[in-house]
Image (cartoon, rainbow, N blue to C red; front, side, top):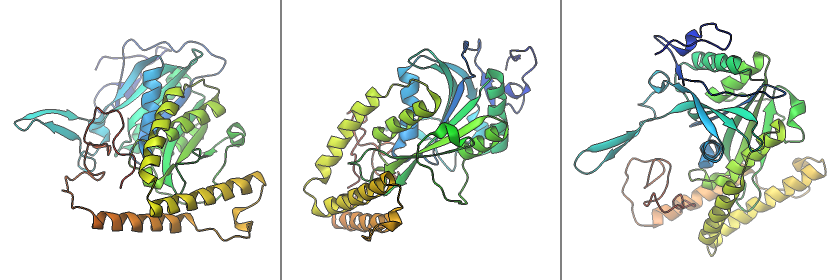
Length: 352
């Protein structure tokens, strides 16, 4: 790897040599000047990416805005391929290609030409502390002041309502009126969580956004959640991020799901129950009252989720047996898409 120097002329040992975790692009893209340092958005898929919302949001930013590669991380050093095996293409006669995981940092400009950094790709399996330190060095190099992490989690919410979101961070003031968790918890960690923790401890404003995806759509592309994530990023950072294409895709997915749900009385009953719970909670939030204070007893998210899972299990048992191709998302590609990768629909939107 070629020797690189930081902007101040000092050597950046983390970007080169034996044991390096990333390689800088050369020449490095110019970030320009702004009133504050650039925002770093980290969008790591794998752990908390229901509906592939995080991956969709990251790809949308790279493809719809001007972007330049800043650094490429060494996935051989960071990934455990046996825990998440890459997909290989086989023609029937020979192997023709393989989709290896990637993890990259891009310099992107929003619709107003304001620069920001986007860290996106597969969540590392290994060397989290070294990975976080490498990202910290890159953040120092480019003068990052704010850090925002994107997450998508499956929840007992209906697809017929706007995607909801929950925020957290080291500086509550910048989160505005976005809903918070409000409860102390111990959670299984992710690399994204560690990034937020360590970069916040280093004096940067670090925030996290978690969009809620209908749990029955968690294994298919759900662009409505990606759009909601980017709208929330705009709200807390001031970045002008386009979402029109995601909204158009979300409308198509909504039509597909509505078509498959329509006429199925049992599924419609579950969706209606989710709608009632969602509406009751939103009303309670508006009235600044707790959902627990409502007189009517509403089913919990766990109860509704269990009901839907039991129904789907019964439905699968009653249908024709399908061959097991080893894909946890069923037939199709590794993201749970349908048989035709070019049909533009992202496969069947509803797993029934």
